[in-house]
Length: 275
Ligand SMILES: [Zn+2]
Image 1 (cartoon, rainbow, N blue to C red):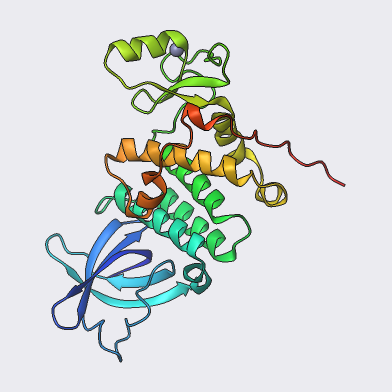
Image 2: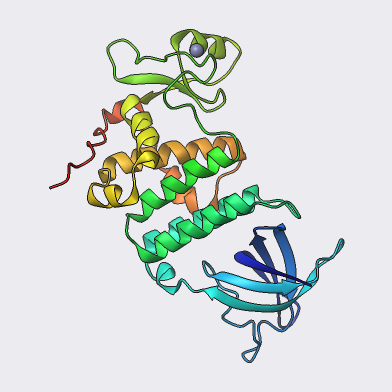
């Protein structure tokens, strides 16, 4: 029998009164278990197996088939998160990304810690939910080793200055992010899709994770800029996960917020000086 902290990723009714649950654990990655009788009102699982809480679960792993969930309890409850729509959507994105990345039996302690911390931040609500979501998405891409190049050219590592006359740079999700003019040309010739991106958006995506949370709380990026970064990370994840997250459908079904016809986004403001 093992004991693990866990986040609920999915739950599906099973038989008359049971649930199949998919959990994300730090040491065993993704685990599918059957919670027998979870749909009965007097079940000890009823209410515990819900989104966003950190659970403590016990089960005996099985090589084949579904192992029964022996016990489940709350380690940390985050009820406030589900009550705020923006936090709820951001929280679902965190769980969907964990579901996309985690593998059966493969430890993911860093991703687990990051997911748990983000859910806790969303629960407490110190920053705009979209900002916590973007911070998680950028860290997620880093942990997967597919973070977009934001400052230098993704292909040659050299400088990738703005294109003449516009504050935009060549950018390709397939080539790993920002590109210099020469590498953009090479990528295009090899059939890669290369677009452009406002430099202010890449700069903000680079600088925001480096700012302490209290600074971000004092001076959060303007909603317009935040939406643009969210659009960048959302479409970048789309490309690399080869599927669109359910929680991202509505946001990304709108036209690209970083398209040239949208004009220039606001720049990220400076770090506020202490009074
Ligand atoms: Zn280059």
